[in-house]
Image (cartoon, rainbow, N blue to C red):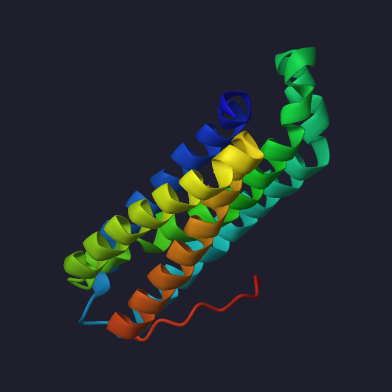
Length: 169
């Protein structure tokens, strides 16, 4: 698991940088220019989808090779790296649109979401880790982060009317 994390962590840091860059731009538009707010959110998510999509494709395609680079004994961790690669896409959504919740004054909802995600992840890890080991931990993270991304998008929609356009120009 920690070997696979070595490849995922730099991407998460880069995606967090994009989300933190969106925050002041979105804050400058909200609530005076809702169209500009929606446009900036869409542009940021478009950029993140391309960046995360490329990273996910590279990780899924080369997981065996990447884990062997760390050592032949870590080659079985390729499956975990693939799961964490998928997780990267959902983290991209959350890391980009999450800061927008603070622009919308939805801090309380964000805090509840984080606490709920932590509790859900702990429960899933307790259930899946004994049966599946490190893969269970990775799948637990994937499930919780997928739900967190969906909830983040819903909260942003509820607070601002921004509806994510899934097509990339």
